[in-house]
Amino acid sequence: MIGHAGIITMKGNPLTLVGKELKVGDIAPDFEVLDNDLAPVKFSSFRGKICVISSVPSLDTPVCDMETRRFNEEAGKLGADIQILTISMDLPFAQKRWCGAAGVDKVITLSDHRDASFGMAYGALIKELRLLARIVFVVDGEGVIRNIQVVKEQTEEPDYDAVLKAVNALT
Image (tube, rainbow, N blue to C red; front, side, top):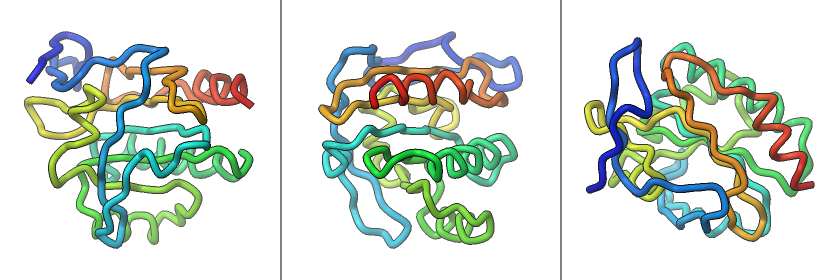
């Protein structure tokens, strides 16, 4: 297990990310997570689409709630060849309940709770909390990572404009 300390903080406290550290230009690793109905989903099933992967600690927190609602709103403005995925360690049942209550229907929420497949493959697993860090990856239709935004302070939102600019540069 590879650890990367000092990259992120939560309320000013440093945390350690574990897993592979990815860079822009890398091939996006495949991973398997669960959808809201407990069915396994492989990232490779989205090949051909531009994907925004929004990794968040938990949908049941204010910042993750705001971020996922914002990406859901933006998803409604993007074309059919662009997919926004929000991945957390929340149980699929909790994600399904949250989406229903929040009216989120354009973002696909996926759970990495079972074996942290995404977290380890993308270096997004927070060692101290066993939650995912707030990181946004933009992957082109060929599976190449074109943008990575690591949100240093986990209680802050990502720069949505920068993410959308990266997506629009691919269309």
